[in-house]
Image 1 (cartoon, rainbow, N blue to C red):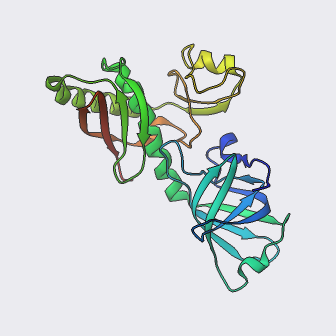
Image 2: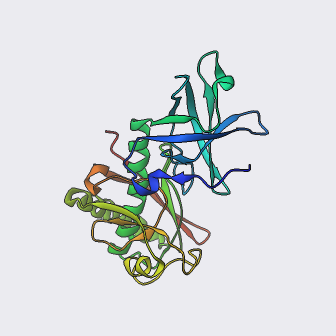
Length: 255
C-alpha cells in the first residue's frame, strides 16, 4: 500500500461523528474484501480491546455510498472495509475526490461506554486494595467485556472484592467527572500518568493520554465517554483467578 499514514481525526476529537476526507485508494484484501483508504478518518479501527466503528462513506461528486462494516489499521494506514451501495460501485471512485464520513452513533456510544468502563475498573482496583495487580489486556466488546490482570486474588477474597469493586465503580460513576484525551509531549504525559509510562511508549514520543476526572492518566488510543457519569452503571459479574492471572468481567447499563 503506497499511501501516507492516515490522519486520525478521532484522536483529536473523540466525540466527532462526521468528517470530510479525500479518497486515496481502493484496496483489495486477499479474502476478497474491499477497503477504502482515505487521507484522514473519524472511524475508529478495531484495536486496544475496542471493536471498530461502522457507518457510511459518501462520495460527494457521484453521491453514492460505501457501507463501512469493519475498520482496521495496518502500518499506520486505516482500512475501511465494506461494500458499495448501488450499481455504480467502484467505477464511481476518483482519487483525490472528497468524501463525507458518517459514523454510526449508537455503536460508537456503546463502544465508548464499554471502553471507558474498563479504564474505570483499573482505578477501582487501586481503591479496593488490588493495586498490586498489573493491568493487562482488555476486551471491551458487548458480548462479554473483561480486563485481565497479572497476579492473583486469594480464593477466599474473590466474592468480597467483587462486591467492593462494583460499589466503588458505581460510586465513581454517580460522582461523575470530565473525561479528557490529548496528545502530549513525553515528559508531560509521564507526569499525568504518575511519573511512569509503560515501556512500549518510546521516550521522546508524543503519546495520547486519557484521564477520567482528576485521576491519574494512562496511554490510550480509543474513544470514550465525555463524562464518567455517561457509563450510567456497572456490574461486576465475575472475578476469576487462574494460572497467575486475574480476570474481572463486567457489564454496563444497556441504556
